[in-house]
Image 1 (tube, helix red, strand yellow):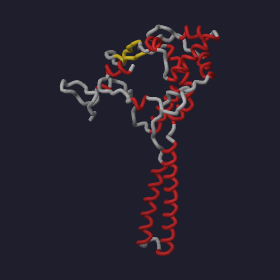
Image 2 (tube, one colour):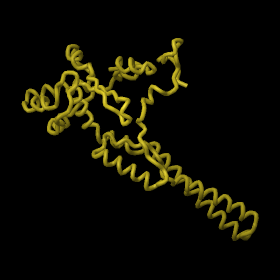
Image 3 (cartoon, one colour):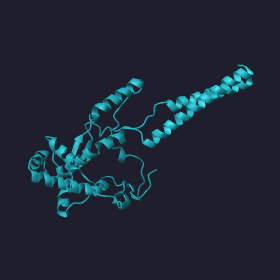
Image 4 (spheres, one colour):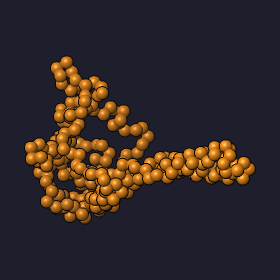
Length: 262
């Protein structure tokens, strides 16, 4: 898969071994049987098979027997471990190429479908990690939320302190005094800072792991239009952006995978 991807996008680089290697002392990924059983009870129908042309209907037949379900569970577990028999790997490694027409009626969207068996393992893992993944993809990072809360608390305290100082200056020196005027400027600056600290934070959301994610996305877009009706929302998938961005070139005027992208 990586080799095919690099062949189609020569400016990309393969991930370094330090990123893909197993971490010493870290236990292998444990796929729980209950998530496999949940997957087996809700198999999709009429989905295109991968390079082997095996479909989910065959997977359903396999899981109807105890031995078949046990064997497929072992396979899904091995995928989670990153371990696979060499003969099975040669069977599973290929992709089935599919092209879908884009809205312009001219260009195509290439897709690579992997084997149904590999997809089955990925679906099981996705089910097991869905709650955590949804939390991660739809909320602020804990450290970011904590920093924002601390900044808001500091801004609130600063505003209260500036308000007390302004009241004191007015009582001591009078409303029109230079001291009161300076204190009022400090209060207004503190209130503006607090307002900025209270402003809603725009952080990216991804509903890929959310239940009814399409509906949530639709409501999100509707919320954008309700908040800022003067803005427009358009599809950004109009061209193969990844291959059209600025990139380093070789002497033959071809993308250089070892060059730096400006």
